[in-house]
Image 1 (tube, rainbow, N blue to C red):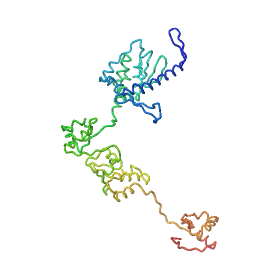
Image 2 (cartoon, rainbow, N blue to C red):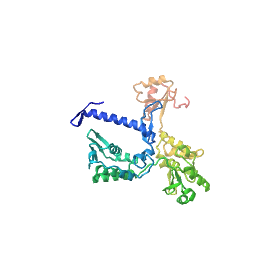
Image 3 (cartoon, helix red, strand yellow):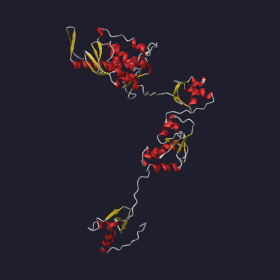
Image 4 (cartoon, rainbow, N blue to C red):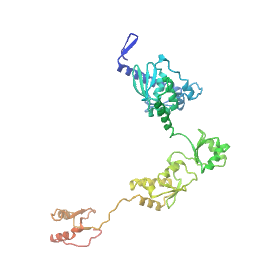
Length: 415
């Protein structure tokens, strides 16, 4: 609750109290709407932290909800194009406030602009200010991308902004919106789709033209890959079986491509199936190189891409063991270890060792002023060994003799 005064046909209140009240009302509206009628109509989906949580924490639009919000589908079931829906949006009347779009990408909603227009602005622009008289937004690449995720594409946003402002957009704004929209469409991630791969382009062309199987293929997306029509997986498989084809079916799970290759002793990797799946090809590409004839082969460069040393190469060997049908050839394992410095570094040197009768004697002699800098303890279990630099061997031998030690030049391997 907040305090307001009505005087001279105007309401007066604290700005901060008004902002808090607006945010509170907005939060209540969103919570009740998304968890009430919109949920019942199948427009929203709700997420909870756990089963005991009485209030939802996250919300997303269903595919149907995105179509409704983008104006593609009417709630009553009547379908209409997004462009038509956008053109039918009522132009704001003079007494309904006005929207001004600045060359600096700022959007100002002045006066009593309708909530329908404000709701759409929330979809395509980032709100930076809100008070009793003006809502301020900024058009950004990110806000346009988020709008596109809900089905509100760049062209539709551009038309919407022109309609609510009642004037053409500033040239730089219109051009940027078009460029941003084009950039967003350069790379599109499609989830939940099925693909058909063929051994060559001719086979794919024949399948697309086939009366039985062709109707379940949407279009070719690569030379040997076609997009399967939505929901037509089982029907396509039945059509292929009826035509004498025996397709291999794979899924994104890594385990579905285990044991799918043969690794030869020369490092050549041959897929078991004539048409290796995209998932299998991706796994092979991380550890091998493909030559001009399409043959995959382990090479020093492909192995070193995965790192060097035991810690980084052990996972590569595990991956190869999972992919290979059977036991990996020992020659392949040996070559991989050799290429990757698997066994690390080693130092070979000729040294002189002195063995004393006990560790106590060694400790005492290590304190001798003329020996302490010439003897270095050498760990070897219970044996009392010390390392002597080659340059000091003669001097150490003479000092030990002067101290009365009996010197032997034969060191017993086992002590």
